[in-house]
Image 1 (cartoon, one colour):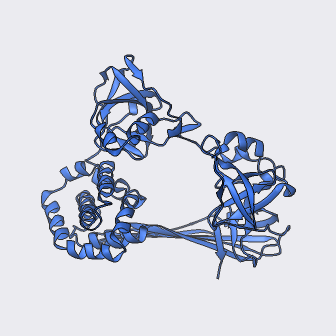
Image 2: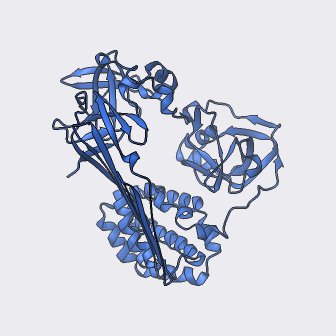
Image 3: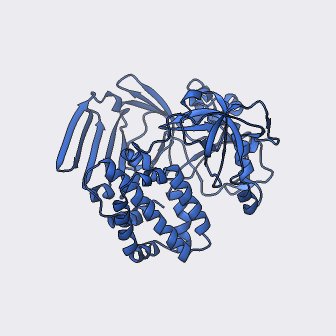
Length: 503
């Protein structure tokens, strides 16, 4: 969806005649412009993809609540709002034509909810000045006492996610009580359910500060106007001062909790003290993930797994059973699997493993030669983003070096507002060098800095089948899961990332 959103939103924002300079007025106008652009996409889906419009409209509403668009709009000059609105309306036909060029309307519209949850559509992160005067209240509303049924956070998600759509909607706007722990994420407060092992998929956003209750279990009262997805935005929220008359909701919340990952060092043993070579049936690879098949019929697929030779199987089976599944051969190099859920419970049905192939280990010793690179882009052309590239170089004499490069920019929308910025960082065997600039309102600022001696980007290496051990010149040592994933050894899996030959 990134290419759809990047092209579409860039076009939408190009229609908005904004003031130049990264000030609060421009920031608020940018939030409003984004909202009006999103509204235009809803109109498109209403006309061209009626089967998707309910989900699109709900996602747009959630995005508006998550970004406090109404609060920002109230603090935006009406003249600016009208100017942007007229620009969007006058160009709506052309904008909808650009959307149609992106593909079938049903496909384009179905991708919008996910696009609105991407980091680039977080208005607080993009335009913090827009919220300087539109922040949530700094203190919680006065507490209340009440009687009724109180849900855990997971039970509340179950309450609004089970039954027909009409049944679920009928529960909206009814008074509710929910208990959880008050935590702060970034600059926002949430009520969560987290016992250290299990955490609810849902979080409750009360819309006011919970600083006086941070880290404590409390009960909130309020209502919901929209069905929640990953966040429930509480309306008219209050802290329940005396919850003693509340009765706990019945029914298990187990299926609405997910197991938290454990630190990798808790499932590692000493190098070479884990799975032996003779215990490995196969390592399967998809281009994005790896699976370890043991000859006792168990399969392990934790992202970021340690090398098999360093895996403490017993600790892993006890602490992270969600990554352990049963496998059996289907003949011809094919496999079937019964997958485990978050609690380690195996499914009843055997399903084929698809899109994966067997890979071979590295030959022992300093046997890698060549360069391996991967690159990524985060963000969008419109809202700005960062391009990164990481390259590893290996020689048969046992030496290695690495090169890291990143370049970020403010994006085309900021440029439309008269503001540009960028930063480039290079990390190599000589150290790190960073240069950056920002320009707006007729003023340009630039800076450069360098540091380090590059010892953290070079050293010696050895390989032991699926384990790559790196001894950096700064004294650090790392052992990571690694293997070549083509017969010519021009592609490599290194520490949970796929690298291709650097040409």
